[in-house]
Image 1 (cartoon, rainbow, N blue to C red):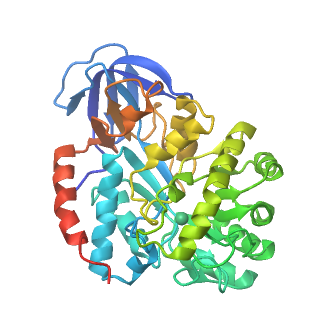
Image 2 (image 1 turned 180 degrees about the vertical axis):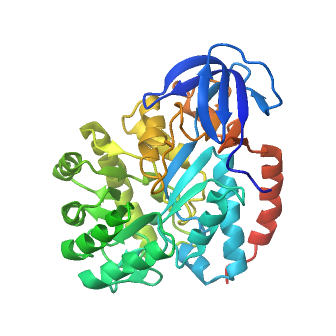
Image 3 (image 1 turned 90 degrees about the vertical axis):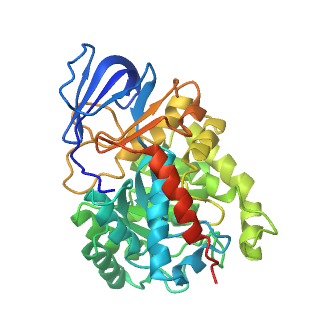
Length: 416
Ligand SMILES: [Zn+2]
């Protein structure tokens, strides 16, 4: 199962969607050396023993990137109860989630919070190539105020010095992203619209993260909390369910990327075991959330795709459904794809990493999908890619399917 991160590969006979704009380029041979794209050639090249894939006239696009997941959750109706399960089950869940991601064509994720270092440990294994899974940039524990969103499991920090310490702890543990709670949430008690960590608190934490070259994500639903996060210098706003037009303009002016995760509320309904308070808040927020995401798209806010996968009934792998909601909200298919490739790729670069991610160009990481038709006219074609390549290495999709089935038996163990 060990997956070397430095594989060579030749893909023959297809059309690559190249660069930030996903421009179609027909190729005879797309050549990968040491896990990176080195040439997209119109001329055929001779076989030299390098592993080969025949794209058979299909399209090759960059592997998809989900900028907001929780690999240490299992989409249970009461999601956070997972963090009280046995460490073994939680470990297997991470591995299982990684395989679900690959099956859905997701080759990089940004994990925005676990109860401890579980996903940081998982990330070390997959990023080194020792374990098969997508590349993972993980935040460790989310940073939240006393009584704040996810304070039952996050790193509670009060005051600028404590937030600074909390960020240093995550960085020391190996975090490649930092997550802060700027407002309440929908999945925990309290009003999701009210501000939480203050400007001064977030400023101190963001200064620490940026010193280490690490980007900061702020969970924020409404305008005051978003304004606080922007004033503090945050890099991405997560959710923004209740953001108004002025707030969208503020995001544009500050060069902030929005990660909507609007799919997360879709499966929420009564009678499936989700806590009543969460159901009530979700149903109330859902239409507004979708409408505000469409307004952000229309306003021209930079959007990177994310799903909040792992939360209630929102399993890893629904990224395409999130993209379809952006399409419904006014993006073209190409814009929706770009939100999950080139735009998202800027959020999942590791510090000191030179190779571009989420784009097909010379020198970029060879995380690639092979599909039978043109995804720029039919996004559905990306739901189950015919081929998935990670770091230049083709994923054995039959093996992956079988392993997912086997692991599901282990994970069927009841939550209590
Ligand atoms: Zn989240």
